[in-house]
Amino acid sequence: MVRLIKKIQIKKILWMKKILWMKKIFQMKNMLRMKNMLRMKKIFQMKNMLRMKNMLRMKNMLQMKDMLQKEQMLQIKKMLQVMGMILFFVTTAGVSAGCALNGQERTELNSQTDASGNDRLENNSDAAGNEGTKSNSNAPRNEGTKSNSNAPGNEGTKSNSNAPGNEGAKSDSDAAGNEGSKSNPDASNTENMEENPGASGTNGTENNPNVSGADGGLDESVAFSMHDDPISVDISAKNTVVIEADSNLVLYDKNGTDRIAPASTAKMITALTALDACSEEDVVTVGAEIDMMQADSSRAWLNKGDTLNMKQLLTALMLPSGNDAAYALAVYAGRKMAGDSSLSYGRAVEVFMHAANEKAKALGAENSNFVVPDGYDAKAQYTTAYDLAILAKACLDQPCIAQIVGSYRLYDKWTGGREVTYYNTNELLNPDSPFYDPKAIGIKTGNSSLAGPSLISAAVIRGKTYISVVMGTASEDDRFQDSVAIYDALKARR
Image 1 (cartoon, rainbow, N blue to C red):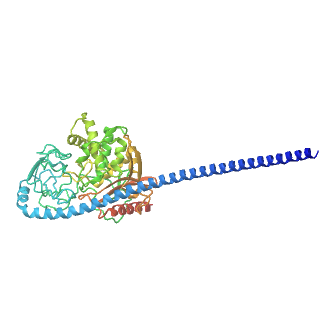
Image 2 (tube, helix red, strand yellow; image 1 turned 135 degrees about the vertical axis):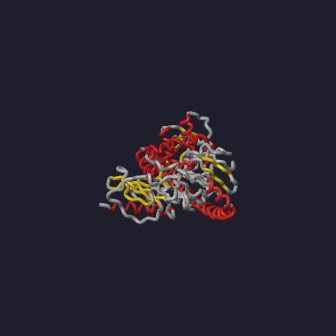
Image 3 (cartoon, rainbow, N blue to C red; image 1 turned 180 degrees about the horizontal axis):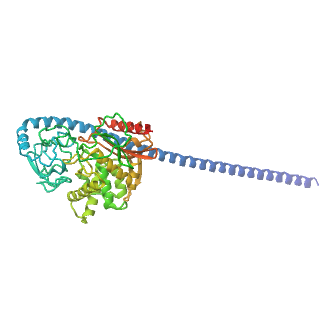
């Protein structure tokens, strides 16, 4: 009995040990399960944190990319301004020497030139990238004028030009917008030449690109109606017009009918003409035509082989003011107008510019002559502040152009896959600018040696659209400050 009891006790002890052992195993399993769950939870948390970090990193990279692009554009702009100033002083010195050496030839030329029926202006202007080239030309259309250029690379050349763009003149090179002017074949696209045209009549005004004729540049044939409640404003711009878009009534005029250089504001007529011939969805492949722009041009940084549609090309034209986009547009549309896709670049630009001038006159801008699609300073190219206001109104009436010029920043992915972000050069649209005006809706900036800093803008005030043309200010900031002053005066009207 005792043995049996001991055996039973031993068995109980063994069972108890087994139970404890099983209990420990279960506890260990539970602990492991808990550890695994905690580990999985940490893994998920780490994954979420990494995902968030990646998203933040991507966001920061995109922001940095945008900032770098903007900084690069500003740096390039500053570099071009410095280069322009250097070339300005170099050219001034060259012109002074040339004037002393060639006074006898210019005197003989002025005595031979027929002035009848043509207001002629005598300009002496210095353009960046065009060292001291001189020409003697007749204003509008240059009908039958004879010019004597005495400048580096263009010694003693003669040209006889009979139409806008100098078609039909004597030529050694096929340059866009100057087909037929005898020139140095090494010079690409002789826009923005330093002009010294013969005087109109006997008063011979010098160094004033705004003068056309003996009366100081005013075209008496231009007539517009003044608003019965004009504004009074003190601005620095040489030429200014403010109109009410609905009625075309002029609220402010300061030399608004003087002949002036358009600079990049000419891109308005380029955009309007292109859309007459092409659809917004037309696909354009950029070619060597972009080499026709001048070296110091503003650009949209198009590359040969880029593929994009017409609306995307218009954005590249109007927001960063790309001269490369202007030539791509002009060549594509010019070939389409001519029905010949093999037309040379120069001839395609000539066809396009003829259509652009016809378009401008049809809109009512009858005192303008555009020679090149980017507005770069060129012989026989001129407009008036009032004409530019008429073209600006046409741009606002065109939905595609109005949407583009009213935007400060536009991102797009081109047909060819390239992604771009463009910023508007109009500071009235920049929310971070001291000149920002939430009522502004466009339109186009411009700047050149002949035109000076310029701005064509529009704003909607109390339900009415007003267009302001400010041309030839002393500085780039002044064009925005003058525009702000104009809109402040309009807002103050009862």
